[in-house]
Image 1 (spheres, rainbow, N blue to C red):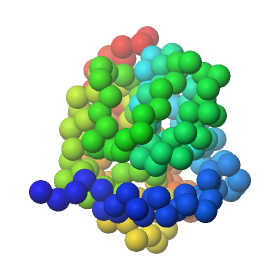
Image 2 (cartoon, rainbow, N blue to C red):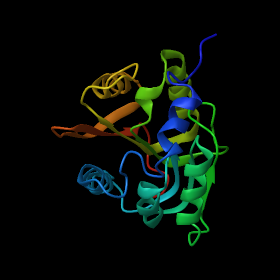
Image 3 (cartoon, rainbow, N blue to C red):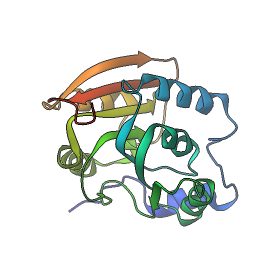
Image 4 (spheres, rainbow, N blue to C red):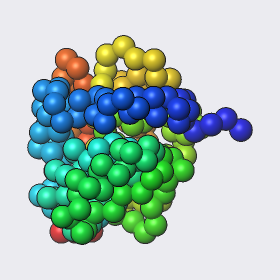
Amino acid sequence: MSTPLHHDRSYFEDQYRSNPDPWGFDTRWYEQRKYDLTLAALPDPHYRRVQEPGCANGALTERLAQRCDELVACELIDSAATNARNRLARHPHVTIDTQALPQWQPPGTGDLIVWSEVAYYLTQEGFDLAIESVDRWLEPGGVLVAVHYTGTTNYPRSGDDVHEHIETIAFLDRVTHLRDPDFRLDVWRRSGSPGHR
């Protein structure tokens, strides 16, 4: 049985070892613009329960917290998860676990899942497990948002490949597509009536 993540934990630990924000989540215009567009692409003004795997230092989490009643997130690296918890301390409706997709599968169900630059780290086995988790967790009418960098990486799949694979999932219907020079953002809604309207 292969590992669900293409990179082992040490790859991510090395990124954070000398820099608490190695990808510039709080400083790069690329990240700020991507977050703004992600929030603008959400088709509903408010969500009951949001899931965000791979939340890093909580930069996007903090914005998502304004749009929901409850938010459950996870982050693999202890130091990043701690920074995210400190950042979101004033939001009691936000919970951040120290785990990684796809092993992390929060209990219950919800109406929004946000995959922000996480799915291309998954092996094929890991990706299949993550889709099974989406099927189990996402309520009828719920939304899956995926946004991934489309430039050259050393990841097992490209951002485009991730989105094209999601597009084949029978229970998801795409409602928004945005192609930026640096990233791709797609929004799908699960078949069925929205549970929060």
